[in-house]
Length: 109
Image 1 (cartoon, helix red, strand yellow):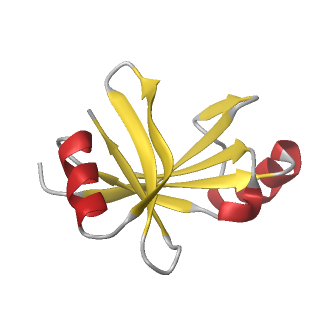
Image 2: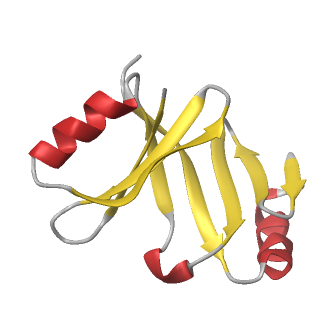
């Protein structure tokens, strides 16, 4: 599978308030839980999650092999913000930072 950016995760300090705003923009969410509110926008996932808002939104690139891609980016000079973690039975995510501190999200197996 070629690399594709198919999702953006937006950390929010008040999930209910953020959900009201994004529902007004994007319509009803397909997933509405206390830890994840997800919207499908023409096949692109926009997600709200409660948490630290200081890092800002993260766009996630879908990759075939998370570990190999992560190693390649670290060798090229990226640094790790969030180490790989399981988020679904077939999906792990991590967040790296480029030299300017911009977040690069990876999602894969």
